[in-house]
Image 1 (spheres, rainbow, N blue to C red):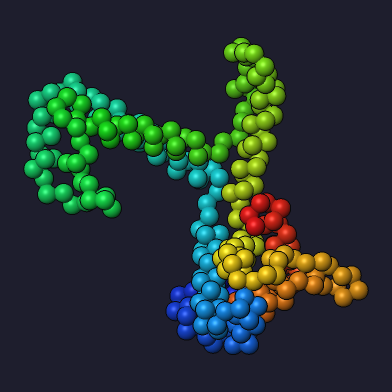
Image 2: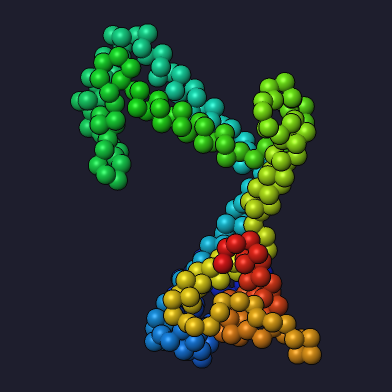
Length: 264
């Protein structure tokens, strides 16, 4: 992890709160708190949460798997859900066995339950197809897992054979699906500034609720070679203490990208 983000000033194996007090200067916390019209302790709590989301973003990026690996995992979930649904359905052909299993479940001291207190005995039906509720859920799980996969469209899978009305033809549909695939592929990639995005989005609702200043990258002045922005002026002195490679320009470009992506 340290090799992945060598400029990180925090040790992610240690307590964050204690390190935060040592690494982030009080004057930076006071400046942020004053900008939002909050007492220093409230501002400190907001920034500590934001720092933790920064670290979560690092971990998410570090643990991200390739699209191929993700698709393989989702395919396995879909296949296993289908197999279990089929296996439960086959119990209908074994009525005596189904009865024995139902009796065993109803007399079993359940080891697990849902947040609202339901356990396996509560989820099964009555004789003949006692698992129909679970089967329906497995079908839904299979459908959701398959829909979450992000496979690149193959041109040979598209045909005008079933074209009806004003629907796109095969070539048009292939191009539409390819563009959608590219957008999903780009969206799933957690880039270098993903942790910084997490930090900014954590601060955003507090800023909007308590400050009259816009949460923007401001305007760039060539003669000054910097963006004049209250957001950057207030947040950069804090986030650069978390990661020494974060420059005002990176904060500005990250805010701009978030806005362009509709995330601000």
